Figure 1 (spheres, rainbow, N blue to C red):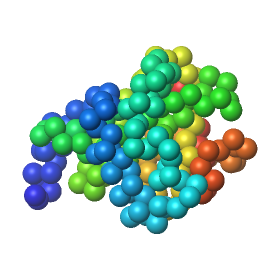
Figure 2: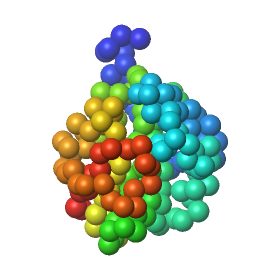
Figure 3: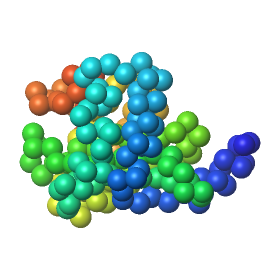
Figure 4: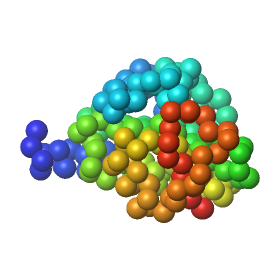
Length: 171
């Protein structure tokens, strides 16, 4: 598929809530990305116990948590992003597990997923967003900074010990 075909293919992409049948596909996308960036190590999402059953985790607390799946024009999963409560800060949600397939990267899909996550967080009553990332994920960091996240010191409650960059954004 050439660049023009890829662009057209992704123009028809849609974002929807996760379902149980999505679990193995989004789990594989997340694991492949972490492997590619040498982050298939303890202290990353690679070893999260809920990674193979994301729909159950996010759907267990509707109104507070959500996971959104991006699908291309052929209904193939190309990425996703999660939002869940983060109690370290008042009225705060954490952006979790934003990952895309290689074909979807660099085409605006990450930004669309982040907008969807932010809209959910606002409607859920959150006033602050938090996220953890790693310096190996340069494209993600550029996106976060471009859409208004700013770097903070590592919170004591950071879940993933291998992550080394921490951000917040006011809603």
